[in-house]
Image (cartoon, rainbow, N blue to C red):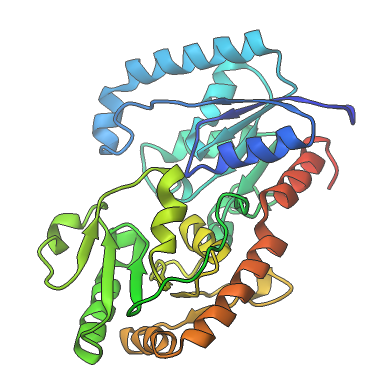
Length: 331
């Protein structure tokens, strides 16, 4: 593959990562097309997905027709088992793993064979967060961690708000995000500081279990375009409390200059430890929130540090340049 501009297909938009990569790659002069997939029944059980296989095959056939017509130099597929589109289409593809696709897909008796084959056949495999390494490298020891790209132009600080501190629990109300621990923290905060305003995101597999929790605001799902404005309405952001990683929403909040409280267990993957107020227990995490709620000056300083860290390590332009090297076969 030459070093000139490329025609690139980003297939399947997961958490706005492909769309953000597209923005960065276009700024580098490449021609990039984002091909979204509907994947009907994507959040249903494996059995239901099996019943919907004919519809999925039709969508993959349509995708592969677009790939042939587009004459792309690079096909970058997002979500592990979807490598089967490249296998059926008989073209080379890069495969990008995002989470459940390998955490569950490599341990499910129905999905494991096709997920494994998809990983094995890929020209190169990327994974988006450090916790996925142990899953992906069991099949592809040469898999590469590609840090998630953050659009630091869209997510940026504004003037700090006035009023009593507001706390946003930014993760979905889901088991995989540590929702049980999150509400233990909320209960402690409500007891220790009743004046705190606390909001949670109104979606996730455990929403109904917590929908009637007193004294909190449950926010409707908002579009990606509206996320910066939502984040700016809060002073402290609490992230996921199970996986020990920084997901997209936490880093987007950091780019907006907000201090982050959460669990973080992978300091070794960066040259510097991210400025996260970390804890493992509800008591530790509630204490971190309280320490920030009581000190506006400290919140502002940590917010500046948080943005600088994201710009240095996850700015979409930096990640696009790194990805460009991999597309050209540069280690």
